Structures are given as C-alpha cells and as structure tokens.
Image 1 (cartoon, rainbow, N blue to C red):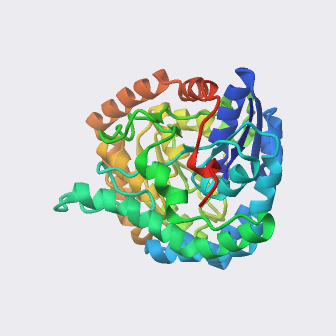
Image 2 (cartoon, rainbow, N blue to C red):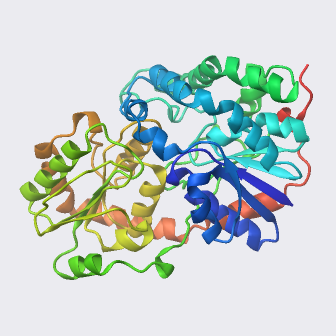
Length: 432
C-alpha cells in the first residue's frame, strides 16, 4: 500500500511517526509523512518520504500569541487561541494535504492530522484512520486530553470523564467548522462537514484506531472496543547514530549522574525566569544539572560549573545517564523516561500534558505534578530531594522500564495496518 501519515505540531508530534513510517516501509509499504517543512531534513535523514505542509510551528509557538496559548489553562480559550493562530493557514493546510494524499491507498492521521485530512480522504475516496499519540476516543476511565484531569475524588467521575470527551468534540467543531467548511467549498465544492461526519465514527468506535502509547502508562479502558488498538510507544532509535559533543561527555564524566531539566518544544513566556527557578532548585537540592534550552523553554547565562546548558540531545541516549528527569509532560518525553528507567517530575504547561502528568503520578513513576503556572524554586527543590531519595519509587520505575522495554509498539501497529485493505469509513462516504 501507499500510506500517507499526516501529523501537525512540534517535534514530539513528528518523531514517533518517523518510527512508524520506518516500520511500515520495512513491511513493504510505500510511506510518506506529510508535515511542516521545518522537519523535512529530520524526516529525510531517516529515509522516509516527505510531503510539505504549510506552517512553521516553531515560529508560531515562539510568538507572543503562541506563548500565551502554551500557558492558557482555560480549554475553551485555548482552542479559540489555537484557531486564531491557525486560521490564516487552514486553507493552505487543507490544500497541501489534498496534494500529498493523491494516489495514496490509506491515510493515517495524528489527532490534528486526522481532523484536517477528512476532506482529502473524501476527495480521493480513500480510507482515513486515526493513529494518535493521545487518547481521543470517549471513555469513562479518564477525561479528555484537551481538558485538565478532575479532582481525584470528584463525585460522578466516570460520567464527568465521558462528558469531557464529548464537550471537547463540540468545542473543536464550534471554533473550526465555519472556516473548515468555507475552505472545503472553495477548494473542492464538497458540502459542509457536520458534527456526526467528523466525530460519529469515533464515538461509535466503528472503525480501527491506533494509539501509540503504552497500557503500562494509561491502562486500557474497559469501554474500548476491539477496534481500538493501544500498541505501545512508537520509539525512534537515535542513540547509536548520535555523537555527543565533547563538552557534554566531559560533564557527565566529571561527577554523579545529573538531573535533567528541559521543556522540549514549549516556548515559555519567561524563559529566563524558568531557568533561574531551575538553577536555584538544583543548588538548593545539591544536585548537578543539565538544562536543555529546547524551543526557548529555558534561557540562562553564567551558569555554575555543576550545571550545563545544552540545546538538546536524543532522549534515548541522554536519559539513561540521568538521575532524574524534569520535563513538560509531552507523551514522547514521558515514554523516553519510562523506558530509561529514570524517575520523572512533570511540569505540565497545557494541552494533553496534565493528563500524562497525572498518569505518571498514578503509575508511581514520579511525584504529583508541578504545574508551570505555580512552579517555584523551593517547591521544585523539595520535590527533587524527595524523589531522588524515594526507594520504593525507584523500584516501581525499574519495573515499569522492564515492561515498556518488552513492548514492540511499532511492530504491533504495522501488523494491524498491514491487514487493512478496504475500509468503508464515514469520512469516505458521500455526505447527504
């Protein structure tokens, strides 16, 4: 089959799909990843086909509007802000996906990719299935990844959880339907997408869905049917081919394993303040540290000798050398820390990060989350000290690492996709 993977977002929204694409290619499929041109070199370096998608996600998140979005705690406001940022690009994104998927036999979409690829699936009359890194199927087991987890003792929690999924669907439809349907009409002449056209199959679980996370992190809900596959994480192996800078190797060799602090693709509204908090917390707790600047999550100068600033490094190389990992809660970073067998302190910013932070805490792989909006040096220092000296937590982390290492998420996903031949999806049926 010719398979096009459509994914929209940051590096964490792209890297797992490169791993999946490599697995599909090895199984004999032709595979193309359709995403932002920012990642073209990253994708082509791994011998995967690339198709361009409008938008520089790094520039968007580094803008004032992007930084406000990343710190937004109100889900309705966050979705509206996202729509305002993305609105100028929606028409081009739709056109790019239509172009990229011409001649394909199957489209696999990340959560945002799936929602944006529906028109292309109809234009070409080809199947589209969700291949997500976050749970997007309604369930009573946990709330929508777009909404913050509820209080742990909330009455009627199961009903609340399911309603958050349906509410997030309605919010997405509310803020995007007008523009999406306008551009559909202009580009293709197709009639408007209705709520049930977009979300009906997901609610009814009528068609296959692939989720690239582990049941050891988020246990499979009892109300997920057979069509829903939780495969395990889609890990891209990078450590063997990566050569660390001499300064990093020297720093690691000079003392005990350090604490890693980095917020990945999150552009902090005050990266200098975030770095000051990190440095003070490390000094208060008596720990050596590595700060990863990422996409302007941390900005520091004149650091002490026992703290090193790096732009980044492959997590599968770096994390096994750390004593503890402090990060933003992206599912890829959570997965890398789990596989490395290192405790993690999650500092969620927004979107799905509070959900993964809560799952890390519930599985015993780290302490209670420390939201970025309430992060303080004294609190972070106390958390680092307590976590590093918690022997029972370290045992749980080692057990989780062994379980995650035994999984073959890519292999399971490839096996499922390879069995797909002809699927009659709601998104490929004429809309009446």
